[in-house]
Image 1 (cartoon, rainbow, N blue to C red):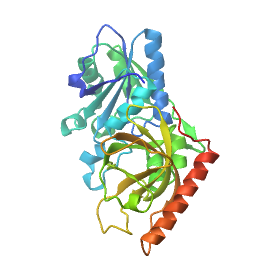
Image 2: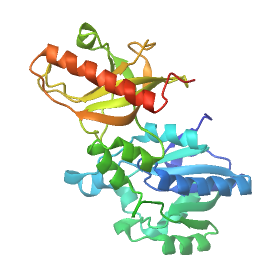
Image 3: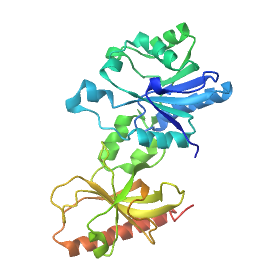
Image 4: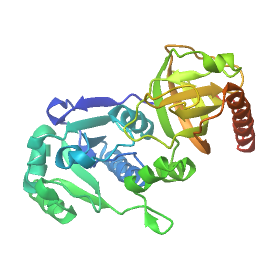
Length: 321
């Protein structure tokens, strides 16, 4: 995987003006298959032009500023986006802060703002339904008109459909919240994942015969609480390990507290406290429930482990390099 250059805001960008810049622009929450079509168009344009392909996104979601009482919970944070964008082969990733000042920018000022910060800007790529500018008054037609004025090509990419509906971040959020990760992953084009450092726990899993890795992961958008079939890999390795995980508040042994991701690797586990891991959520087994005691919990964990092993075997998942 190639390294990706990351910039915190347009004013921090340091890219060579001598190379044509092909820029995909959007919120891109989840970087799903529809977003990937926009980004691929930018990559194709950069390849034809012997230029650079970059992505501009925004943080936080505009709803945090515009309707804070009902803000949209994001599928992934900028670090997660950077990870996926690096795998997609993008050269640079710019995260512009969605501040009151930026929200107040008139739609007609958007392209000049980009040109001032990105002198090599040759083309802008957006989804055909993208809206921008103060009051969301900017659309593809306005963007193309402004692009013509400022000698920047503007390409609108058609929405990608799955079934009868276009793929959307909203659709994926709903699937994740309902535990339908198989459906979410099909729309994303890759597994929904958690990343974090392994932190110390109470050791209850080990006492029950099922040692777990407790991941320091606190997503804005929580998946449905319950048990998942997963794969696990280290931050610096392509080797994946089959596993089973619980995301929730552990009602049998805890009272209150935030939800936590606990992962049990099937077979020998090479990971320990302090390791940075990525956990791919592949399939939902059951919702979280409270058991009458630890013995009942142990029996259910054994059943979950067996079910996860069967799922992995059916899907050909082994330790892979």
